[in-house]
Image (cartoon, rainbow, N blue to C red):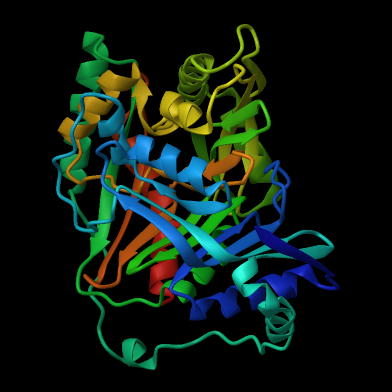
Length: 435
């Protein structure tokens, strides 16, 4: 179905930059970049998928069944996203909050052109209908002169500022209401989020993504362009990966700032690794993820490979856990997603109760925020990130949005939760400000 041609790379970093720039000519783009981060367990340094041959776009109604049919019939690489609101396809839930982005709930495409970048080589995997373009495309990419396009018209005019959907006072009140649910025993933990947005604001998505990726350099960065829907993601978190009959999930819960000096930074790492509140956040979500995965795993195979390990990123330190399992024989890829979606780190425990309370207290429809971006292989393997630290943009509506949040537990102090949100929002604000 695909022709594969391999080339050796002298400078993978420079090639990646040229490849991303070259992709801008296409209507459909999926760019996934691990930024050479050591934690990823990724099969390549970066991947580019462009130019849809087929596609699936739908709302949440029977979305997973449609995805199952599309994935099984295509039996090829497909790239796209799962929005948080697909929860409504899995449980008796709804999403009635304000939606300024108006993204489809699910969108995947089968690329005509697929390029996998490794440490020393690059593989071009084109559908046979376009395989005669491989050599010329490779040469075209190599000969590109790297430029960063500037939108001088925007630089000279005032742009609408980023606003918060709710005030600080409202945020503190809502976190207090969340705590009341916890004290009553309705839930143990829930992820509460708030949206930042700008209306009537035209941005250059590729440039903003480059700004964001430079600021954060995360292991699960992604740039998605589908019609006028853009995802500019600097995600540090893997939702779930399937390879053969093994799955791994790597939830993040627990955050601390980076310091300016190495000595202070080391102290912050030490404090995070021992912080009772941050540790309890992570452990509760690990238990939830273990329970979700156990629904599709061989009995006794679910294990915690890493518990609450501190990983450092450019903006923050995070507690990351890794859970793995062997799948039951005959378990389909979509069954794994249905058993585990939405991911525990962005919902809470118990999961369904937490999602109901989240819907009640949040002001914005999450949409793709706290959903997932990723891909399926022809063999039915997959890898998906968690859409956090991400800017979402509807070009036709000129609506820019990003959301931030954190886990609320019985130990949470509303003012400190608000400060954590500001810390997480900083990179997106900087990336947009640079535009």
